[in-house]
Amino acid sequence: FDDRVTASLYPAFLEPYAEDSRNQGRVPSQLVLGAEVGVDLSDRFNFSVLTAPNRSDIPPEAVLRYQATDKLGVQGALDQQGRWQGQLQVFFRF
Image (cartoon, one colour):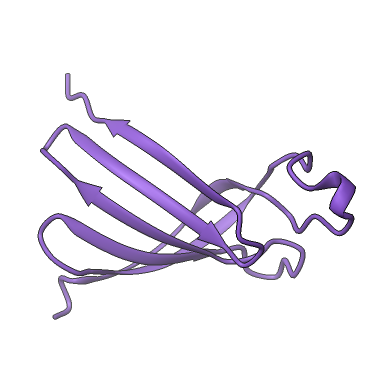
């Protein structure tokens, strides 16, 4: 079970809460220290929660990752304000 649970600290660009509905979608991302705790649901699926410690203005994000192949992955994230984002990840080794 211990190989299936991960915890990480790393710099990440996260979006703060949009306090005014006119500013939704226009709030710039901020570089913050991100803390992520995740669990491998299977060999290809991973679920995690990403948050910025000591920053109440940045909502936590639920992240779901799918590793299609060794070189190709898809990631989707949803925060408490209902904002979602997706990424297609291509891995190269050289």
